[in-house]
Length: 206
Image (cartoon, rainbow, N blue to C red):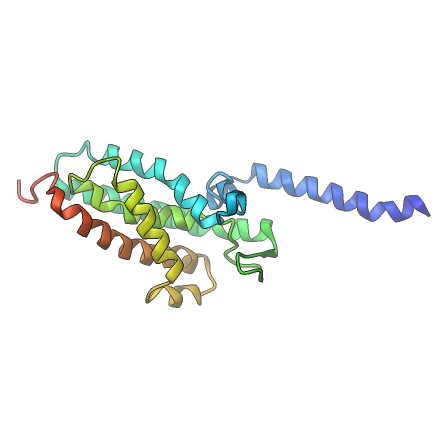
């Protein structure tokens, strides 16, 4: 009887182990949670979205540094938009895998959700890449724009300005990604406004 009673517990443990293995081997899960940084939610009372945004900064800095190798604003813009499109598509195809593997979890409001769980942060990575785009064009110091970009993006990501909620209601991977694109656009406008006094990095007309 004791063995029989223990069997469900053993099966659950085995199932948990297999699930953990599935998490580790799934590249799309890693992408959707930005290499598991989204799983840090709750550490130091910081949510998954904030962790994802913070750990997106090294990628943003790398992209800005690489893109600044190009000598015209037009080429910089085309390359950056191509990179944003790639992250958008890869993220949209990665989100469903992570949603399935994560299953029902509590969000930051304490509600059980099965869609766009807090651990999924690839959308924040995309939003941050949109946010820091003004760093390509203005001479704002490299130590300043990452912090301003992070602050602006997290603000607009939380307050959900129009039309962010419309994308939220899509309940689809594309909606997950696009609502942060909107937040990133608003944040980029504010970052550009703060960057304006530093002057243009390159003239628009060569």
